Image 1 (spheres, helix red, strand yellow):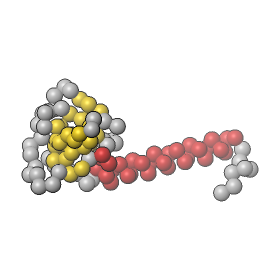
Image 2 (cartoon, one colour; image 1 turned 180 degrees about the vertical axis):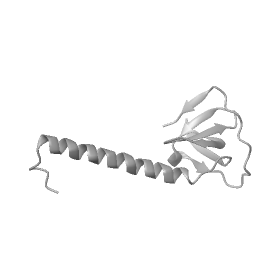
Image 3 (spheres, one colour; image 1 turned 135 degrees about the vertical axis):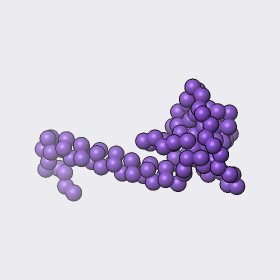
Image 4 (spheres, helix red, strand yellow; image 1 turned 60 degrees about the vertical axis):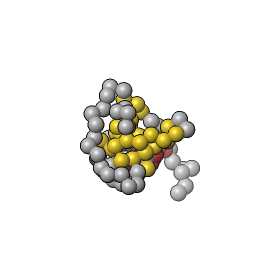
Amino acid sequence: MDIDGLSFEELLELNQRVVARLKMLESMQAHLEMMRFHPGQRVSFAHQGGRLMGTVVKYNRKTVTVVTDNRQSWNVPPHLLSPVKDARPTQPQQPTSDKKRLR
């Protein structure tokens, strides 16, 4: 695509369309990654050199809410989660007010 002949306004419009398309593709990818997990499923994720284990309690727009075994609530991007093998589903515990965000 040759963009050298486009005016300033045309370039702005093209940029807006590209950004919108990238956001949509990112949203679709996050949704597909989230669908690997379901509420009640045991998962783990890396944190400060170790691994935390918890239970998926809900989906958010770009993250999954996980309540850890010590009852802390974390919003974790789905690509950082790993399913825990050989774990039976548990009832999600009520999160405490200690809500963490992992990016």
